Structures are given as structure tokens and as C-alpha cells.
Length: 123
Image (cartoon, rainbow, N blue to C red; front, side):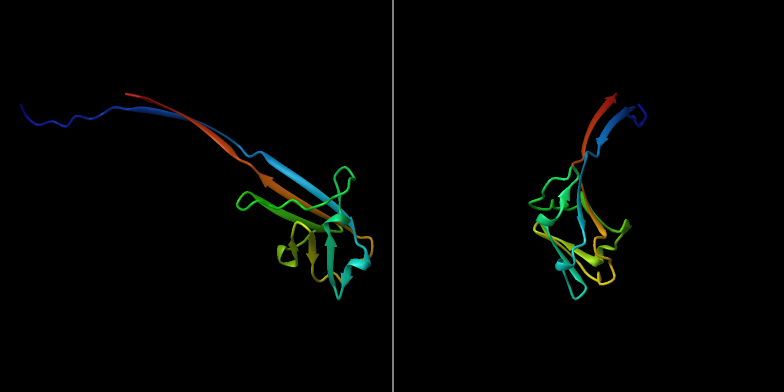
């Protein structure tokens, strides 16, 4: 018998479902000049209110690889190099020209993504 190549015939399909599961948290503050020193604004966590107007005891941390911060002053998104976030405070530089009582909003967006895959192979 002559040599012949046998080929395996396979059919496969995949069904993948991914859910991003965002968990946004917002914090609100009005600039108080008592928190500003030489153009740097240090806002203690307790000076913020949450989205329902309630008191804040600490600031949610953005998770590595699945979260991020957005800081708005007077409704304008700020560059991340302008501020640092800790659970106890937010420090914003170059705020000497920001008017008293200007609204400052911090948004923390974390995600807990999940995926499921069903692979069907037919031979």
C-alpha cells in the first residue's frame, strides 16, 4: 500500500461571555481655602461627601490593572500628574487660581471583570 497522509477533520466553536462589572464611586467637595497651602490643596477624606450626601471616612482605592481615578475641578477633567490619591486624603497641586467653593469631584472606577467560555469540539 502506498503512503498516504491521514488528515484529522475537526470542527470547533466557542461561546465567550465577558462582563466588566463596573463599581464607580464618586466623592464631592467644595474648595475650602483652609485646606490650601502655597497653591497645594490637601483635602482630608472626611471633607468629602458621597453621592448621597453622606459622610466619607476613607477614599476607595483604584485597583491595579482594573481601576482608575478621574478628578474634576469646576467640571474640568484634570491631568493625573496634578494630583495624588490616598485612602486618607487627596493632594492637588497648582490650585492657587482655583476659586473658593469651586466644586471638586473625584470619581473612582473599579472593575471586577469575569469571563466564561464554552468550547465545543466535534471530530
